[in-house]
Length: 308
Ligand SMILES: [Zn+2]
Image 1: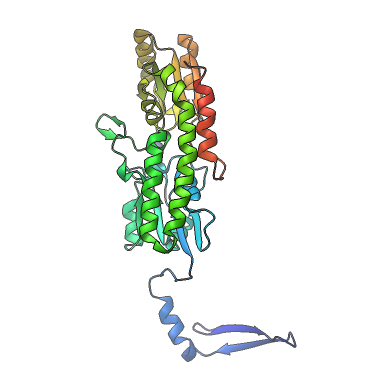
Image 2: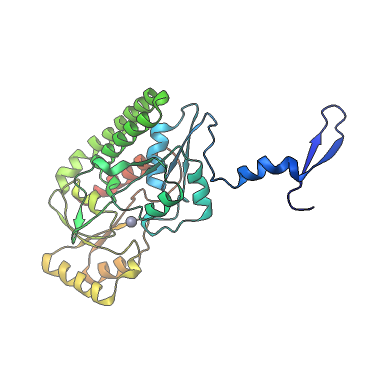
């Protein structure tokens, strides 16, 4: 078929007879000029929220789930791991193109925002961690994995709820009601942690994974973190030797790792010093369902009971 000619097939309602019509290039002109304009979000009456990665998806499912006319979609696959290593795909961009708002964790975890804003300069970005003021720091760098602190996670829920209400006022009451119900569940879990926090406060542990400092600071653990970019295999022989020295000098025998990271190095360190490993869920990956954070953090509580 020549360029500029569109073939449209109609199905006749009664006869079910197929009729093909060839439109001329002249008729096509208005359509062709539209096709060259930048893609715009169509007003389809649905408020579409796109999240950057799994922990934000779980949070937003709770704040915006079950509301007529509101959809929640995640830009990235739930099992990609941490978003700070993520490289955009065309499929990611297609999802963001359809976003009314985009919800991210922030605190520099989503390092690709320049690319995002280049593609979609008018995109409304909600940064869940924008009101979190106690993010851990390591050598002057902010550690943005703050959702593993239950207290900080509650701040993120409130921030997202308020921002969604502002961006989509017609559903504000729904977002606020959902957020309060979810915070109630998270606070209930937090209260279940209270006794355990008292039992472990001030204990010294080694942390191999940067998702866990917020989880440690929240119950007041004394910890040393070895950053691995979520891959224990990234540790050099020298790093491992220094870590073992530090543990021996400080009498530390407990190692915290993330269930999302690979194992192996922690095993060999524990074997060397006669220590033990605690593997915590960090809600960075997992099954996509609304209670995923509550379940992972609830499992962590059970594990913590073996520590104190
Ligand atoms: Zn990370």
